[in-house]
Image (cartoon, rainbow, N blue to C red):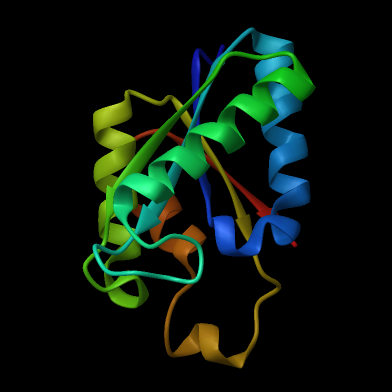
Length: 138
């Protein structure tokens, strides 16, 4: 059913991704699907990496680790968001289109009052992506 799974990850919050990573691994093993982990970074230094190249290496290491530990083929793709606070949804939607993913698995937070002002990333991706989206509540 699913051949390619895209899972957005924020390396600054690896500990908060456990549920989405478990769902990704389960679906990948069940369907024999390839997984592409997508990480958004800015062109300027961040708490995770000084450069986009350093971020890409860390994301590739993360993908390799996930694939090895869970028994699936994994790759990584870095997307540049000039202002990750406002651009992340748009760059992730572009990554969905370009990756050829037929499902997106992404972690979400429990809804709160701010979601009435700013919609969640998962909500926007689910609304606009042309493939299935599995939003995993944290």
